[in-house]
Length: 214
Image 1 (cartoon, rainbow, N blue to C red):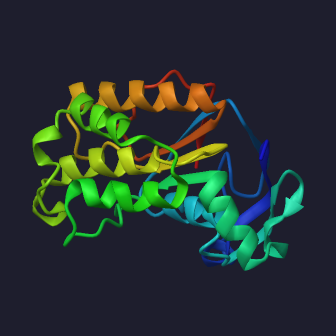
Image 2 (tube, helix red, strand yellow):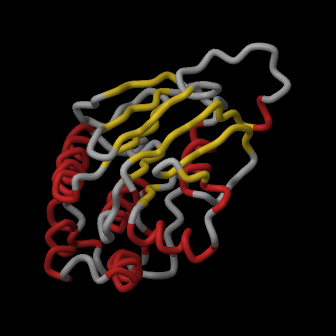
């Protein structure tokens, strides 16, 4: 996948508003593979909805979203499975971890679907994030910041053309913000992938190619 093209996209919940002032909604916007994007948003402006539309588990919007100029509403279930396995990775704002599994089990569960990372590379990521001592702890017992770091490691355990990160550093300090940015850039550069980050104020430390206000 080389591009994600928004054509006059608008959440249906906003359809009755008289005016919409946005750099994304009701615009013609193309996200290109290999570029990094920051989407700044106030709460309630549709930040998580945007990620949900791209990832394909919500379709309550007007307009058209294209992957490589194909309308995503025409994609079959099998095509969506392949896209989420090979082309799109997503760090959800609510993380969607399995609290009863250990931190390592959460990551390995994803990696077994793709066989993308070697176990020793996964352990190296835990070490880089300073949570190697949490490998065998239940994910639900970790702090939210530790869960965010673990969830990013899980996101990196697959091929992707684009990675979506919805408020990825809300519970991270500056040091871990920097580490997350570095690990993300390293993997994205390795894959030639695009990065789309949403924020309501605290930004992931990256050099963005484009910044939009939602």
